[in-house]
Length: 294
Image (tube, rainbow, N blue to C red; front, side, top):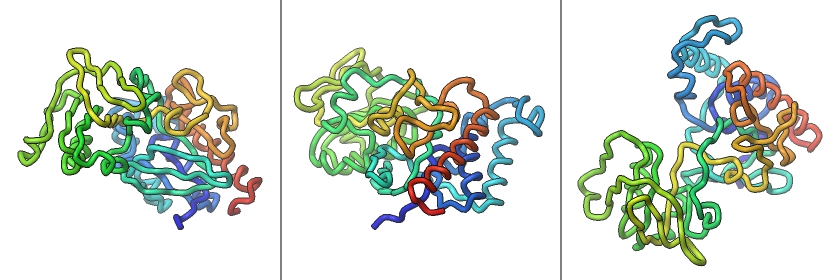
């Protein structure tokens, strides 16, 4: 049986960190998903002038402050990406890109705003030839052909993993960094510099349509830095690119809260931190009502 947490926080920007700290103070059993380096957006900020108590601070310095705070609170980051969340009645089941399963009574989404739109056919064929998790679904394509649409260089490891199982891998990088694979994969990884347009098929995905060509494959892996909330958890109410929330940071799904950029503009660090605090307190109240651990 999986370990059950009170609250799972997804995202290590100001909103997610603020939520984690507040929940830790309230003695809740939490798990924080994200990056050990926290937020690249914060780290690369030239200067932040409106963060209360820290005037004209560089993003990299604010990042260090965040890390120090987490260390003092004994909060660790679980470095994995959650690709799916399923309501299970009294709790939520979460699957990671490493095919791990986590359980929590409540969930706080703090993944940042997602501007990318799904490709035509992506949502239609999700689970029917389209996947967001190479580790999870690679065994389904043993000896078959797959395509990987990658948003960053870190996905090269996922493509290499797929190449050990699939017969062939077409790798479509959407980033400017030089693509590099070990020579041992030269025979079954083909790099295609092109732009995806749509995914086509009948009962399942069969073709990745690019601007310059069409590629017939058995499966298509779309590996993004973030997944649209509507695809992360089915049925959640959206307002454009944002998750719809009320002032308590409650979403349309009981037990799921959202805060920070994912909940709407303005995209300000101090606003995100404040919403993270509200989401955490709302989660505490939800746990008490739902009969969760107090």
